[in-house]
Length: 579
Image 1 (cartoon, rainbow, N blue to C red):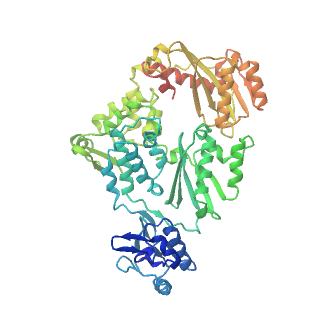
Image 2 (image 1 turned 45 degrees about the vertical axis):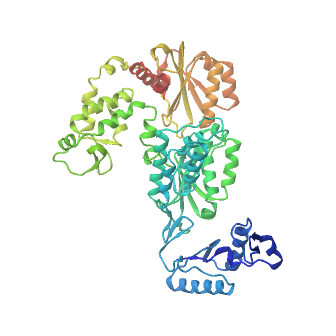
Image 3 (image 1 turned 90 degrees about the vertical axis):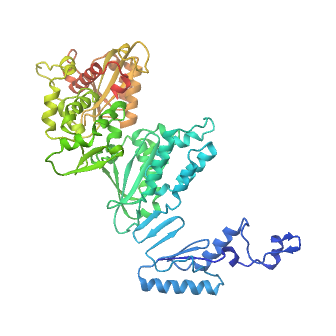
């Protein structure tokens, strides 16, 4: 490929004799007029771009932006012929070329702030360090300048919209400007990502495209890929009304906006859309008008929706999501930052570990599959900390949670041995009685087909002094999908029929209408308000027999978990416990 720079830019265009008077300027020794287009005229860029496009419009292998011309060809011989044609055309139109600033027959060129090669495009970061000179900004105007600089690199930064939300909040009219170390760290982290020079690969139109990512509460972001080669990023803030959409609607909106963004690339090609929202992969008749409209808009694309489990995407389902509510989880991470002496002691006679050196000569070790190694001297402390932060779950659940990120030899056995002596678990955990015959509910074939619900409480708020919920008693309303055992808990003040109806409706808005809902014989569930609501939505209502809570065993099991976790976490916020 080649990059041709034109000499003197606008001066290549003559001005009509009758219009030269409009460029007149006066000096002490006389009046002068331009005969060629000068720099500084408002309409000059638009006219010059149109002229150059008209001159070279018949050449499909040429891209023109003002005085910068990019030439690309499949072979060297073909490229020489293309250059010869272009130079002849420029000579015939009296357009001069600056050969000193031009590059001919190279494998990589810098064009319009991008580095372009045979594989794809990456940003030109030669001037990226200039932004650090503007830190910290002293006012909103300087902050806008930083945001604008970062925005130019949007195509190369994953989930940029969500990352710069804190910066955008600082330039709002109703907020007073302030800047702290966290903001500087945020900007430096983004600059660091830009410096990695992510390469956006050139798409192969003969291969299927893959779209994957997720939607958060305030932004949507997606990645366009081909065979693990990233082709483009897309991210967008959600408007105030869009933030109120259900989870399904946000996921569907993210898909729609992404295919619209990359329409010129993917239209007419096979598209595989990966989502972690299983409901999108099913054909349903109870979708909202909004989602149905979006499905119609997507029908012109050849796409397939594929369910991508969260466990298959470590990036999306990593520690940030798993321990989002645990502010003290950092204590576990601090346990993994160990001195060289401790590390070497725990790693004697063991192979297959990579050593990572951090600041202050601190070392951590990771396995070949990137799990952090816990030395023998810290195993017991690590187990107790994990057990406490996870609400005193059993050994199996604790191991399953941390096994993806941490490693030490004999993890299963040591968790069992250590947790057998937990005082909290011995005191509070439920002792299973000997049950008689119970009704057996067959596991549904589809997610969210059958849902069970129950109410746990009352709970004295005084036991949780750090909670934002003040005074009195509260209850926890739970909903559980009997197919996946996925559960949601809502903290409520009242257990009247209107409250129960409101949260049943909220469940339906988020996950769709179930075929059947199973509850006990509580008066709020048997009320006319709830019964009429379920009937109007064609949802069957099954009541368990009185004084037989085991008939709704799934919800009762959730209640046992809530009881144990509330008992083991007295003194912290109840909102964090139920999350």
